[in-house]
Length: 302
Image (cartoon, rainbow, N blue to C red):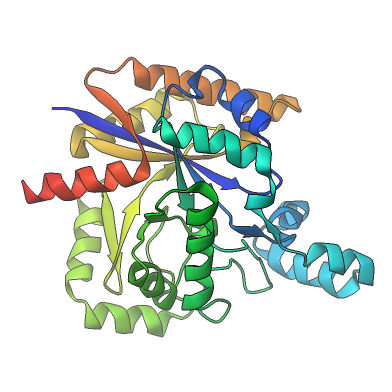
């Protein structure tokens, strides 16, 4: 049986250079299809949050503290949105790759705005029309249908999930629908009792689910490539998923594939070793995110 693998890469935006992507992927760029989770109008917090990673769960409060203390000029630059379409060299390069079916553009939020409450895709931060406008902008920039939504920080609430489905996008994430309060989660499980069975089945059988539901919203799951884990362990996880489901999605971030320092160089080398191991497996085909989803839908019908 043919097995399929989808490579997901997050955070492509106005500041991304074509050279970063090409050098980050090296020999795999243009040979293996990659789905780029792309930010339509990037906000300054998408990068600024990295300054506070050391604060762990408190990083969002640290970001808010910085905002309150920042000067007028700093805030003006910080809150300025940068449309990816203004990076003409990047867009033209990616459009050529799209025509070759080596790149797919997925929507990655709208601005990737962080605030003191966390990630962007909570409905008290963002509405249906804003999400729709981001999708339509990407479609016009890349002359390509946007079929997949990948939420920033793998986080979205019920309303945002419904908005995303309403405008015709499927969701790929590392986690199902998020709930800010336990009572919301309990209410969801009461309303969707089959989801209780689904969670129990996953937990008791130690499964690697292809999809999971939260408040009736389907999410196609993937796992994140972590450089602190050994290649043997990562490959065992990948092969277990291929054996069980015949497919999986693996996530990285192009910034981590840079070679600016020893840590990133190590990450790049390990990720490249992982990709080489995957290409050596029998009956494996690499696909874009929308192809992955279509394949899964067809397989379940059969």
